Image 1 (spheres, rainbow, N blue to C red):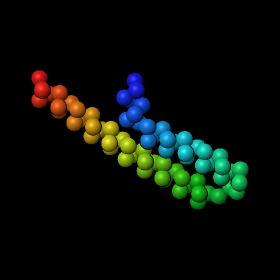
Image 2: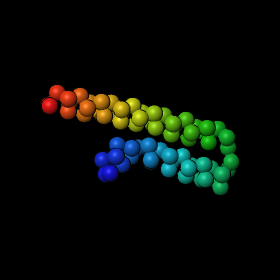
Image 3: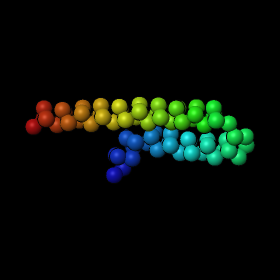
Amino acid sequence: MKKIFSQWKFSYIAILVFIGGIIGNLIVSPDLTYILGALSGSLLLVVINLIYVIYTNRKLKSKKNTNT
């Protein structure tokens, strides 16, 4: 279970930062451009992390197949 969390750590952090950014923005001064910027930044981090996880899983599977 710990390995799964370590792979998706950046996605969890990106989602939490997005939620915190929206709450902070709505409290201080509501601005749609800031919300859209936080959303695009968080989505970019999630997509990058998704590519990383898929790449490492394929790499591990191919390594297991060559060792057996």
